[in-house]
Image 1 (cartoon, rainbow, N blue to C red):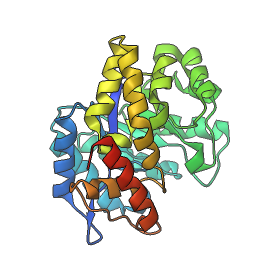
Image 2: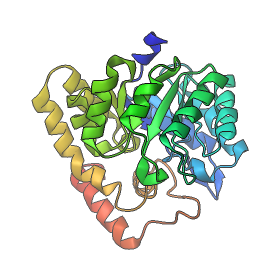
Image 3: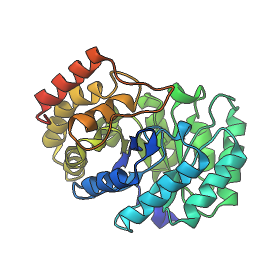
Image 4: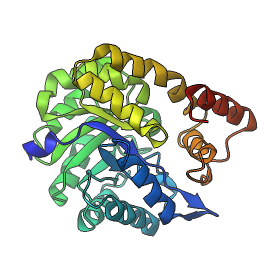
Length: 296
């Protein structure tokens, strides 16, 4: 499993789930995956927050993972979102991901029920013991109302098939603490596109990214530049992307990134309630940012 922990680095896209007339559009997901893989993306992450997992039925969730695995065809890791606020449901989704050939699973901290740090530890330990699949922890307290502390992450280093963490707390200090406390035992992936370069600078290994849905080559190039020791080029890429990254969060993710893909003619802007269409004002702002970037 130690070898597996070295795999999770670079630009991994939290890919959208495309809809057409309210239904999952598998053909468009396949084309989006081809776009990613031809532009340097090092991993595909279906059914995360950006993939609107919260409003997918179980059948749809499983279908999205199956289509992604088939479309990727082993070219890069597929990391299936399988998290839930029910441990048993997370186990069931993770078992399915393993059965259909996903390379790993991404498990968000249980949301709404606000477990204690001991509860978080026991949740991940139970999933890990139940399914022999590499697991990536996902901490994003702004979405879940619970923050997994570095001490809990350090405890989970001893669980063999826990291989990395996607850290979306927004706290560089917390991320630095995890790197310091866990070292190579727990690769740290950015859960915030705007912090990818700072996280790399403190010892992180990459990002699970929203913005790569529309600029996969640029996100990959920034990380490649950093890893090659070309800091001036990495900083240039970071500052170039910064206004666009901000634009992708004018409204709740994934509303803006789906609208951006629609502007580019790559997918529908459809999202599922309770998410809704981007406001006209913010569509204009997003179009302006994308035009300035050179995407439109």
